[in-house]
Image (cartoon, rainbow, N blue to C red; front, side):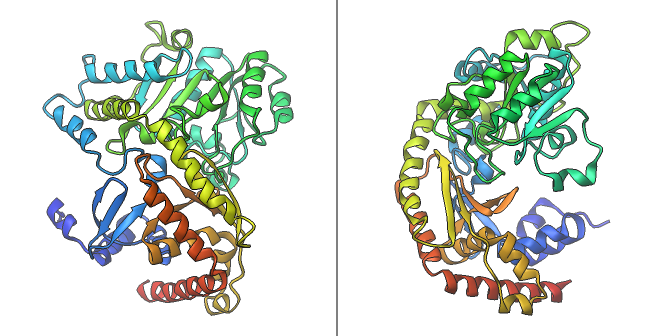
Length: 461
């Protein structure tokens, strides 16, 4: 037996970590990271910045897919977790004051009368809990979601996720799920008309779908349709919530109050895993308000003391520093810098977003010679992952970390911490323009780099 200690793991270089990932975790993931030059050893993180083992400093504009609303290792959140490290972290035979306080504070900032929360460990778990709540509270089975949606990859969450390639290998999924086009009110009403729907689940802005904003009246109209046909409205604010889009919750932009809100990602300031779903007193009591039902949905680790302490401090910082307002102002500043590039540079198809949740969509490109030299793989990258190639240039040439959206890899997402400076916003906009203004040169370099990486991957395997 050859067990590895924590100190040994912390001392591993990139090559050793890569090999252990290939041996024991996800070999193809390692290949893709290597292809995009992302397999680096980062040794320090603070605020908007991370540093690698060579002392290079990077701007993190991916922000763990929106989880790092306060940046890396926010000192107040770390201090809050340390403050409770002598308390029992998991003790199911008592009530937890820290979790109760977090639920209280969530009720204070929630829209409408959403005042009962359940704590779990991730966004997918929050969605699972919301779907179960909808079914038990209404006594109905049918669920409606939208094409292009992303709600997670556990079985229930996957069943309402709007990408067939994620679903196909795991079928049959949860039955009685219908998907309609996002933004299409006629299709939504048709799906609701039989009054047999437990809930509609939506993202106020589709994140993994490519940062897709709905038509201006869409959410209010869906709310009205749900009322008309006696269905609940679940809003998945896992990526959009807690200041990301310029409001505490994205639904506040549309003045819509759902029946259930799902949260995760930013809820603990990027320090601990935590998720939640919140609902009204009436719906909670219908679902779990009797002695034969109150333990039908539970979680061993949900609402543990350290995670709840992190969430408690995160909400305090969000409110005290008016981070939602900051996100709105900074996001508009960045959009003002980016939008004029559309049309000016042919490779850039669209810029869209709200607050500090911004998507950059790129036109697919042709690889030509580099494609022939790589057996067709680079052409596939060019067609389906042009955004990823731009992302690689941002990293390699300008030390900016970004990421593409899962359902549309030709869209780069920019989701920096809400505490980001205007100077850093300008740096990213200028770097992007530098890359796309040299379209052909950048593509040749990117494809050449991809070819080199492919060769090295084949040699390693």
